[in-house]
Length: 253
Image 1 (tube, rainbow, N blue to C red):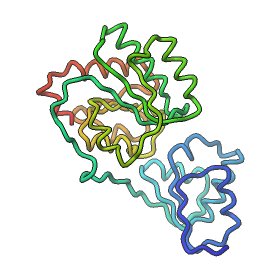
Image 2: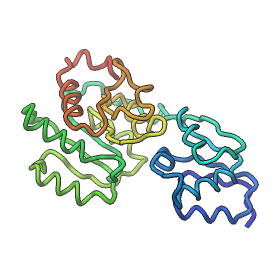
Image 3: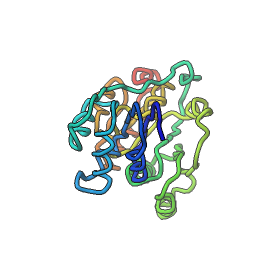
Image 4: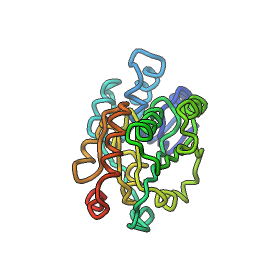
């Protein structure tokens, strides 16, 4: 009942129990969705308020997240921006000669991550752009798995899209090197999502939703942005990537 240091990385409803512990140094590193998707006048909003007031230090990985913290309380000692890093000795490109169209998604199968937009975009690529030689592997688990599986079946994309389930993180660098294009359809990020950063380090071509701080990390020489939840725009961006001459693709890596 007397802790020297507690570092909270996720704020859920059950974390209210920390309010009853004696903690000498209480650090909170909230996720973007911990704050952006929560109403201040709600049970979780109250839990966040009291946890923040108890904290000695709050770390965020995007500048705008400081304002998100202040929506809940101003009674905090310190709010510091500390960006997460990616170990480029672990995540790097093993093979630059990639000519196929292999697409990967690593976000969980939850509403927040909007995987259905990638599935719809794949249908557009197949039917509108007549693209036949591509595959989409979707890793992760979540409450939307059954709905997404039904969407794939309904669109007749079973031979193109695979729901791969969980992956072993220690194998992620080699896993990423099996693909050409990384897609993130998340409707909300804090700073640069770890999986996006790791895919960039492995020199995949990146397509991510244009929200949060993603525009800070992506520009016309580093990755592609598409309008959040817009499957037509996502399909257009993937098609644009596919049609970039091979010798020019390294510019975007």
